[in-house]
Length: 84
Image (cartoon, rainbow, N blue to C red; front, side, top):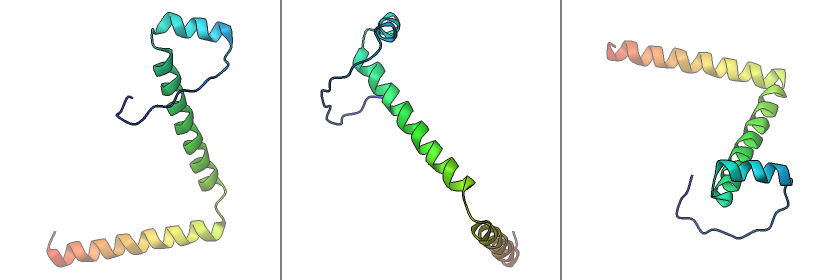
């Protein structure tokens, strides 16, 4: 997960048992913490997306369904015109 972006030194406090377990799995604490932060950020984004889609109004859902049907009909018409 490493890239050439600039790194920033931070200080954090973690559970000592957790740190011991991490140290048993890796010699690079910084990489482990960075990977953990990447995973946490991904989970947060997924949760935001899930909340967005679960809280859409019925009107939004119906509009999306109508748009999907229209798009599909247009694509089928184009493919027919092209002989595909």
